Length: 70
Image (cartoon, rainbow, N blue to C red; front, top):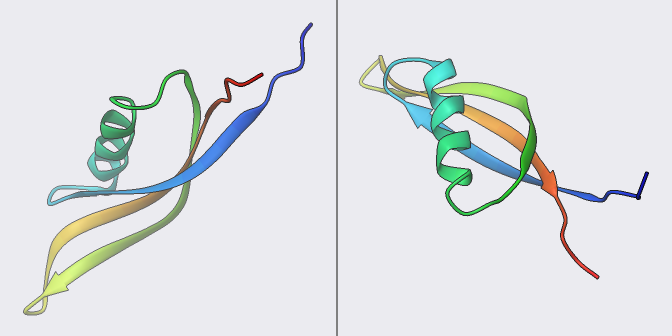
């Protein structure tokens, strides 16, 4: 079995509806420019509040993908 190397980046997704949709939005957007995504790990969850009301749910993710190099 050949050795594999993976790169890990952090992304933040947001949604006015839920943390799950925020995380999904982050993965969906990242998958448009990154190939071979492997794992998404939720690092933290928070909310944006305006005028005493929650206006957005945010999910900070660590994404890993296979590193292609020489």
